[in-house]
Image (cartoon, rainbow, N blue to C red; front, side, top):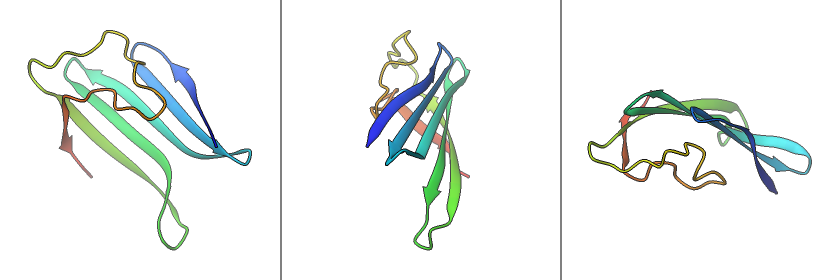
Length: 89
């Protein structure tokens, strides 16, 4: 298994996981406002083997310290430990 960052900018982070030469999952984290982050996870699989995508919007808690380097926390670590999930489709 290999995990790598495909895109890393101050406002966007895409992390991919490769197993046996195939991309099995990708995560997109986008800053959509000063206090909101959107997290999209592609290529989830259910018990029947079907793929689906999840999308969550997290609101950064008031007073939370957010590192100016938006890409910090790649490789599966949570970018914003003080964030809480605001909406879940």
